[in-house]
Image (cartoon, rainbow, N blue to C red):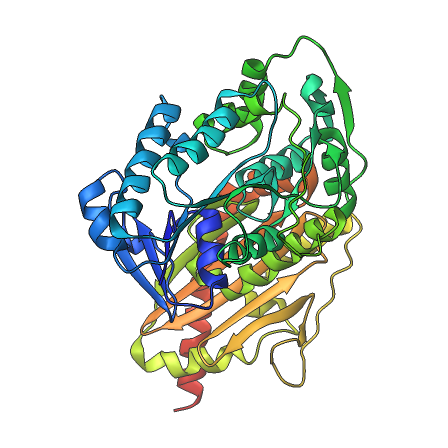
Length: 453
């Protein structure tokens, strides 16, 4: 049995899905833990050593992915105490190996990086063999460091940055990091510290320019100044990005330290992914995930994606007609519910080079072209349309009929400053338009139902 403490976090969720053995997913709240065929979810407080000991009995390998930085305050002391509790419980339960994800860095370290490495030492003091992987920035949608990179590069074509933009970093692709974590459970991997990273050593300046290039944005103008302290940088980042303030401040303090692999580990035979490919894969994976999980998103912005949804009731007698209407999409702006509003949207797009045309396919199915959209997901009771032809970024429009409820979801992965400004500008309009569109869908379904009588 393998246990993953911190399974509700970004890395924890990815790891649980990648493990092909029975997994014990541990976290404070069971409902926040990932589901899976081989996953057993257990709510436990890692600081409760006695309770944790009972949970860990029979576990061969335990991953420790807990981090208290988001809670603010003295996270270093909190992380030290939590790690000591986990190590003691693992020892008492007879766990054979602890695998811990820490941070790269040598010499004078920031408070955050020093704490990350101290946690590894605390875990090892209990006597259980510890495999400590040390990594830098993780390139993956949901990684806090990557999201900071995304928001800054997307929203600021011109940036005034401190000296830390020239700090060296050796980022690692999300898939590569997860592969290292899985491999670390192999008894052939010796206990100790293992530094892992991608094939490219870059500066943060280089990394932002690389993201801009992959994203199809103009080269960013980055002006370096000597007087912008990490504290002032944190305030600046907080204005531009929605990343948690306690986390962003700690991460920015760490940007003054080079985080590169100095002693590559021979225990891992994993071909590293180049950063250009890693960023592209991250964006593609997120694109596909949005279509598949569109109806589970909440309103607001998450990982660079703005989402807005609304729900309206459908008379039960009209739901068959509403499902039929999903197969009649395309070819007319009236299908979207408010034709004149969509006509204005098409006119606006022309000012920015868009050329949107109407098209009704012979059969609505996944991959079919519907107007300027591609059918990304389709079923008896739902449809999700995706377009990459908008000037402001990639967009999704979805409808799902559940019982007597029609749920409509719109999402935009904004591209550059123009895309962000567009969403902010039209958001108040969307609050009204989306509701009207959904009601028009219900009205049309009722008309179809009447025609069938």
